Length: 231
Image (tube, rainbow, N blue to C red; front, side):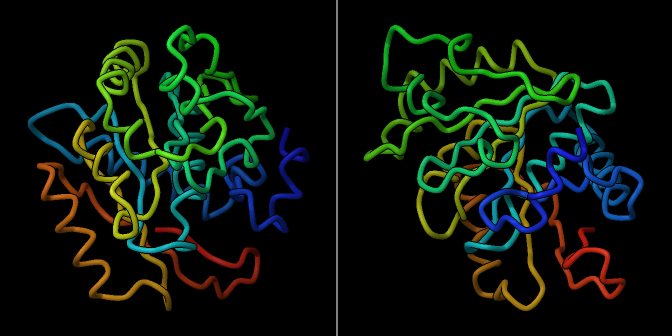
């Protein structure tokens, strides 16, 4: 299975699945540490659903969400990764799955059910809900009553759900999902994320009464094994 994803190291349109390609690497271990921190991020309640976002594009949020989904599933947790970035989806490329139907189809076609759009991955315990066709009105779909109903059903069927959403400062989509989950994970990239953008991202999350569970720092890796490290 690892060989299948080796090409992602050179594919800018797919997340690099470090946790599959090299599960014993320091980067994979860092993702497991992040998983533990998320699980224990709230002392008073269980964390079951999160968004992974950033303040701007190309900061690593899709790579982070994909690898977190893998390590949650590897620990025996029934996990679902949802591609809620209906503008620039990546999950189908990262996991080499079909994207002719997905979340956008589920929200716009009344006769479609979850069973029609959720796909099983090569990783045990990990299911995938791709974005589906690019929608002309993603914000309207994500704010719909049908989306709230879908969210309720997903929470009843999965132990942990990760939503890969667009950068929160660029469109309202991330806020719409943030208001329905237990918290947000913010991805910060060395040399790219600006302080003002990060501060605005935090405020936007708080405006919808959601919590910032923490940040994932993406920095340059001096070992040259991979271009970046995650912590």
